[in-house]
Image (tube, rainbow, N blue to C red; front, side, top):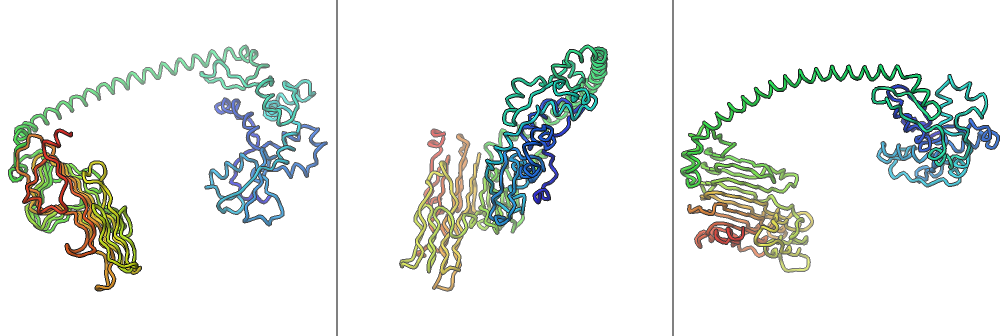
Length: 538
């Protein structure tokens, strides 16, 4: 049939039994597979009643278009792509499912998607009512030429004389067939001869000497294996002794190195950021870029892993001018920036240096507080509703979302709305989370601001993005050092007095006191939980 040209060579028909190492698997599975896959034409023809009752043309009508055997649980393809073909495409259910599984559900005729098929009930019924001999008996005859002449000299000499419909065969195989495959009790020693009820006792008697040799050979192999394992264990034991000795030496070296650290460690908990800068370079066991981050050069951009916790156990020190610590997110492809830092100290010495995730939030026209599109784009919301210009054709300001503590949920800033179909809105601010053990001394800034939208002079203007989120936590309950916060911002895009500016984001500070003078440099007004409250609640 046409369909055979599309088949990849799977053999779904009845197969002869294998021998030796493959025999055991075949004895257990081949007969069940005979009734699951398509049926062998030779098996069906072996019963003369079928030759007399059914013309060869009928057998052709029942043929599976993939394996060429008689279709088991016949299916017919009904795809619209070939609905005008005059010939019906009949395939056995197992063949079809196997093909679709290995070919991404593409139709086996023309490789198009969404292959459609239905059960061919009349073909199924005709095939199920065919009379056949026991498949185990048939398998025995085609795989045992030495027995075939004796077995087939008369029907009564067959080991299994059952003849019935294919539909009744499963019940016969499970309940009454004398050719149920058996395992030799010496199988684990290598005996894999095919056995049945009729030849089991004769096999044990005839193969007694062979079984004895198999057991002796197995014992000899075990003895050789045990000797090899003993040698290997001796070698492993010596290797383990060397490993333990090397680890003891490493441990002693680390203990010697840690003496200085331990001495300094007692003081590190109370040292200020400035004192740490003087001490760290002289501790040989600590490495810049691994244990701490100290940057003295001007005009540096340092990118931290996005949305992963970055730990500098002994502090971050930005000593140069115009240093920017930011996320390594793929901003050009819309990835949002989220910095997570855990450190003992954080020092930013110049006002031009910063930790900055501004414009790394949601893209224009996206986010839970996105601005509406219009003649003038609406600005995004976050801690408040986004700004908007009065007028039906102008985009609405974005909705308010999130919660002030930033512990239950923490959000990126949303994007502003597009104006006039071509002037994109601003992008929202990103997220910065910082956990500090000892001291924050910042004279620079920590920012997650939203950005401006694009515009055409004063006529059309994309909505501004909203500010993101900044969460700062101090962990040491007995810390008495002064905390200097510098400028912290989660402002929306746009100038302070612009009517349609983006909404501010959210800032939360835990475990430290924030003086009124410092509050003036933080926008928007932060949620603050004092050291005592933070300790009590955590």
